[in-house]
Amino acid sequence: MSVLMYQICRVCQHAQSRYIFQSQLLNHVVKYYECPICEFVQTENPYWLEKAYDSAINDVDTGIMKRNQMCSKRATNLCALLNIKDENILDYAGGYGIFTRLMRDVGFNVLWKDKYCDNLLAKGFGYNGQNVKLLTAFEVFEHLESPIHALDEMFSISSNIFFSTLLIPEPTPKIEDWWYYGQRHGQHIGFYRKKTLEYLAKKYNKNLYSYNSEIHLFSEVKISKLFYMILMKFYKLFYIYTQRRVSSKIWSDYIEVGERK
Image (tube, rainbow, N blue to C red; front, side, top):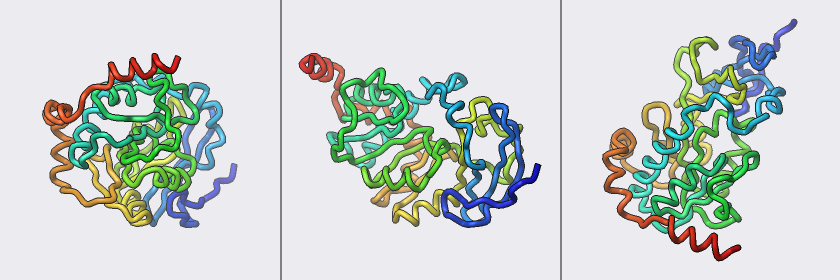
């Protein structure tokens, strides 16, 4: 079988994203490519995604609850830093609505949006074109077939994007040496490095902040990188104080949803 040695990078559109290896993925032999310009690592055209998304939330995502709890605390800290209190927040590709419900329980007006997943836990609080101060996208970027198209949509909704994706190490690990390739579920098709995110920040004229290769912010305003890193690292400690800025929406949401029926 012949191997296509180059593909167009799905981030920077460089024509010679180079073949680096191939691997078994959901009973398919899948090729991987690395861009020499923005360092984005991608699969070949992901023709297997219909099978991969038999379930929108894959069965091996055993960390889904802990991750959402962690992200809600970090997002609460970020809202204090960005002075967000009553403004709308959108959880993009929000899955079952876990994060949306957690953040509303804290006291933020978080809305839900997801093309492929049912809203089980935050019904009645979907996004309908409202003005949005902050967009969150946790464990989304690595799933995107067209990152630029998706980011165009995200930035048309909000100028600030708070997101998680695990940056791929250097040198590029073999498929068996890095769990985030997602061999078991086949849903992860694009992997970013700091240089990739820097390219995107420059393209959209945003400020980039990252903590520990996993949680990132594209912001329209400049903030202290050190303070951002401290808030993310010691998120449990700061959350004790930052959550006090707002009042829980548990009861008000109960009344609002009940009045709609």
